[in-house]
Length: 353
Image 1 (cartoon, rainbow, N blue to C red):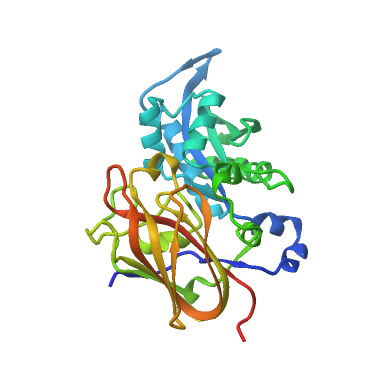
Image 2: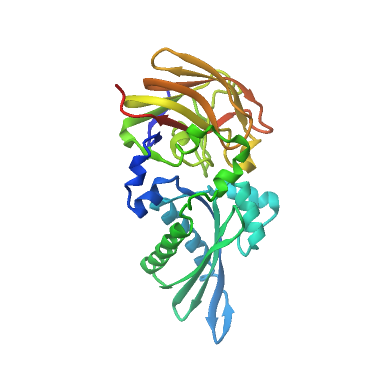
């Protein structure tokens, strides 16, 4: 039975609002869901000498290097979720775009297709051994440039890394949620709004320790060089990753199970059906009918919407030690017969009695 301990925490939504009221500003910002960012390639403009720029094969790799450093540091920060490169490449290919030097409107369009909150692009130039990194951050919801910044670095890895971290800190401030202002995530998922009881739970998520949760599945599809489809993808908080079953029967009969180290008083469950990235959504099958099984023995049959974005799954109101999800039927994918599930979020109402 394929299984794996979660490398990251399960996003358990604690419906205790007073906890967020007592946080310091920086803590309150981190309490919301991580911002989804698509990082386009940083263009290397060349080495400036005598007012003119020239590019050679040795220096041209710096743009790619800076792009990779932004990706790595953004993920490590825990503030951002970065759209997987394989998803971004698919969208760029379909739109016949390169990933450097795009206009603001084109970057906004790409951001919408990959369900991102923001798109980061920029350029790198060199002058007498010093690098200048120019970064531009576009808010996908309204197309505004919310950050245009520059950072300077010596031509050494530690110095470049420091410059990248400096820009990322400003990005986090620029994308900090503002009360009453919808972000790209909520706008993109407007057709599948959850009930009021669920809408704030995704924002007030508090994690259980990683060792307290275990996700298993009946099967999962073989990984590629760019991505894996393991069951713990449903709890990583990133809708561009997914559990993809590997049973070979179109998904029917496959199951996913989430177990807790200690019993939890579960109130609601919501999910992102199928592949969360819009460009990939129709390619894989989505779950239509699902049987939710609780450790108490209760079983509930639900029908999910064939729509991208967060949607309510089931009301529970029980103390349970595990929850299993059994696929009964699917909405067929256009290319792949495998069924996918991107996210599962379990809301708990307090300490179990």
